[in-house]
Structures are given as C-alpha cells and as structure tokens.
Length: 112
Length: 501
Image (tube, rainbow over all chains, first blue to last red; front, top):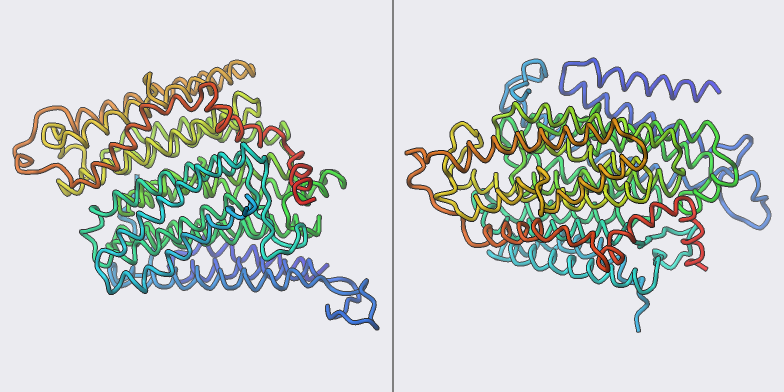
C-alpha cells in the first residue's frame, strides 16, 4: 500500500511543480515528474503478490506470473514522453534566445 | 476479392508513408512536397468516401492488426461514427493541402511543413479508427506532438510562447488520459474497447468508473478546449500558420477531443444521466463564455479562435443531450463547424498573405480588391452565424429543437443567445475587414493566387450545400449512421464481437 501512496505523492509533486513554478525549465521538469508517476503506477498495476517473472515454461505454473503487458506499454509511453520532452526543451531554448529569460512572468506578450 | 476491412489501416499507413517520403524526396526535388501532399490527401479523401459506402454495405468492420485476433491483438474498428469522422478530417486535410501550395511559399523548407502536417493527419486518422484504448493514446500523442511543432513553426516570439503554453497544458492533459486508461486496465485487465465495455457491463460500474470519468473529462476536455480547460486555444491557434490554424480549429480539437469523448462515454463506459448533465453544463458554458470573449477581439485570428470554443460548446451540448435528435444535431454541427471555421481561418490567411496584417481596425474595403476572399468569407460568416440556407443554420436549428424536445428550455435559450452574439461579432468582422471604405494603403494589393482561391471556393460551396446532409437518403447513409453508433451505447461491444466471430 505504501508504494501506491508514494506514487500518488510523486504525482502531486509534479502537479504542484507545473502549477506553481515560474521557470520554464522547472515546468518541463514538472511534466516529466507527472509522467514518471503515471508510468510507475502503470507498472504497479502489473504486480501480483508473490509473483514471478513472466517467462512461460512447462514446469512453471502460469497463475502466479506478474502481468507482462503493462511493461511493454510503459516502454511505449516512455518513448512518447521522450519525444514530448525533447520538443519542449527545444522550444525552451528558442524562447531563451528570443526573450533572454526563463521567467514566465516576463514571457507574456499574449493575453486577453 | 480483397476483404473490405483491409481498407482500414490505409488511413494511417498512407499519411505515415507520406511523412516518411517527404524529407527523402522533398528536400532535393522542388515541387515534390506540393504534389505529394495534395495527391495523398486527395487519395485519403476518396478512400474515406468509399469507406462510407463500405459501412453501408457491410456494417461494422474490424481489422486485426498483424493477424492477432482481438481482444488479444490490436483492433481497428470502422463503423458509422468512424467513417463520418474520416470524411470530415480528410476533406479538410485536402482543402488545406491545396491552400498550402501557395500560402506556404513565404516560409522556407516546405517539406518540413508537409512532413509534420501528414504526421498530424496520421495521428488524427489513427485516433478515429482505433478500437484499442492504448492505441488511441499513442495516436493522440502523435497528433499532439506534431501540432506543438506546427504551432511553433514560425519560430517568432509569439509562436514560441504559444507553443510552449500549449505543449505543457496538452501534455498534462494526455497524462490524465493515460492515468484513466491505467485505472481502466487495472480494473478490467483488457485494453480492447469492446472487451472493456463487456467486462464493465458484467462487473458492474464501480467507483473506478467515476474516477476514470473525471480523468477522461479533464484530459479530453483539455484537448477539445471546453471552457475551464480552454486557456491554451486562443494563443495556440492564431499563432500557427493559417493552414494549420484551420487544421487545428477545424479538425484536431474534434478528432482528439469530441470524438474521443463520444466514443469512450457512449460506447465504453456507458452514457449515464450524470455524464449527460456534466456535458450539457460544460457545453453551454463554453458556448456562452467563448462568444462573449470573442466579441471584444480585434485580432482576426484570435476572434476566430474564441469562436471555436463557442462552437465546440454547441457540439458538446447537442451530444450531451443524449437523445437521437440531439446527437444528430451535435454531429452535424461538428461537420459544419469544421467546414466554415477552416474556411474562415483560410480567409484570414489570405488576408494576411495580401496585406500582412491581422488587425481588423487596419483593414477595410478589402472585398473590392479581393472578391473571392471577401465572398467566401461572407458565406462562412453567414454559415457560422446561422443564417438560412447555409449549413450552420440547419445544425443549430436541430440542436435547439432537440433541447426543447428534451425539456431543457434553459439550454435552448442560451443556444439562441450565443447564436445572436455570434451574428453580432461576425457583422463586426465583415464591416471592418471587407466592406466599409477601402483604405488608401491597400490600393495596391492583389487577390491571392489560384490554388488558394480554389480551396476557399470549394469550402464555400460545401457551406452552401451542407444542409443537404440532413436530408433524406444522404442523411440515412452518413449522419444517421454515425448517430446510431453512439445511440447503440455499450451494445457496441456485441456488434464488434459478432464481427470478430
């Protein structure tokens, strides 16, 4: 149970970071933290009590295998996260070139 | 004879192959990006029309990816709703690709634009045809990541700022969707939508369904720009190049947001009165707040972006009613809105192309110099304001009648109010931009090039003739098929499993 609560705590840290922080880089880190929390939670749903590695063989019992599917899915989710992060960092670099700052309170020409 | 379901993966494969070929061929040979972009989108449009016929002949089609039989393997499902969305998406994509031939001349390296454009198209088509929860998420992210890059395409100050804001908010939204999928997977141990609906129906709706409902409403509501989650849209849509603004406002928010909401809430989780009330409330809120914010705008594209929020409100209001007429009206308005809003964004692009400004106060009398742009814009404005005989009138009428039939008089009243305010704000656009006296500094401007005119004229004709879709035989084949898919609710599972055999 404690693991799930820790994942929730990580998720909340990420949300707090995205909502409260004023620095472009810290915002990106916030998104990454949320993503990791979701991925961790996804892996946790695969866990079975006393489970063993999901390798199929005739001598072993299928019943106590952990669920292998979420591991494959999380790999995909990590790759997607990598693409998003790379793009976000790229945009952040361009923003720094144009505005000369990472502070989002100073980067606000669009409003209304 | 090839089985009919083999057409389904083409909707993803064709644009993906195009996006792959574009950097290889388009970088070296001039003219290839234009031809490849237009030909591929035309092919996709033709295929999507053909898919309407297939669905009418064979009913629901299921394609098993890689030959693995669903629910173990990944399924791609084609039913009435899917073919309806495919026609909408690919018609707009074709018109916009033709428009871009001339418009994108002012940017360097067109092939990059077309590459991202086709990737986004692949993502949107993928979301629409996917019958698997996780696959839906993957395609959603493909379309979203391509759209972040396209919003930042100009790499000027405003574009970058808007793209960053959009990317942060939209990625958090996607993560909420993923979290919802994780909860559902943990409960049902399956990712196939049909199987999931069946397991949920057997196990009974637990608290987990309420939890995922909230997560999906947040995630997809953010993609669809419903009001509490709309803050990114008025920045992101105007900052992109005009064809992309048209694509984002016209189809991206619908295929990623509205379609996903429809599919999941009607066919997987089951449509409950609570969800109906939430959707009705959010729809009415978006409708009214969007139009109030739009009226005060002087930037042409920003005004249109706020109207997108308002019109999405109509679509959600119609669908949220849950009655056959309401769903029909909502889907009809979805199609119509993508036609006239794309056209209006293309018009704003044409004006920007000739005069290099987006400020309504600086324009004036442009219809004298740009007759095609002015006339098509007049058509689109009348359509969005709901003036008969244009398509917007019929769909708004159906939605309002459906509200009254369902006894929701308050919502019907707000729908009428929002429609009147829309008319007011487009009278402002028409007066300041196209009619009035021609300013001296615009004496030398010229009408836009040929391909832009063709694209705008085509969409204007669809606006004029769009009302025919809700009439008689065409309605039965196209719109009602889509509405029926949603109305059958969680019976969707039985239909899909019958097809798998």
